[in-house]
Length: 125
Image 1 (cartoon, one colour):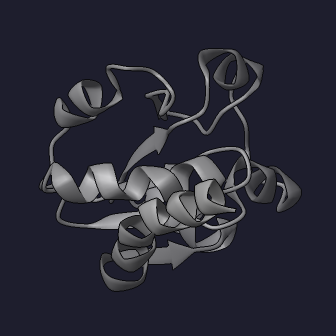
Image 2 (image 1 turned 180 degrees about the vertical axis):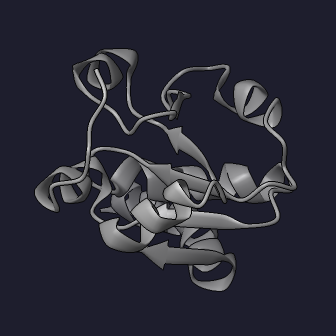
């Protein structure tokens, strides 16, 4: 029980950041942002998941890798980013890293890649 409580408390900053500074978008709005060239798409899934299919032009930066923050830090922090994973859990946990690194505008694809494919949006392999 104590471990569960500590885990939940550790997620609190990410949740607060998500509520405060992140715009949550569904697949249709995300597709418009991408089509307008307004965002860098960051796919935080594993390389294996990414190879199975991804959003065209997405940068794959695996949130579970030790160099995640370093690779994320190489992106232009002044350009808006759209972050997603498979269903939304890992990308939600990654939001704190975006905040710590100074990204100014972050969009979160609610429903993740699953929501994108369910909405019939295009994939690239």
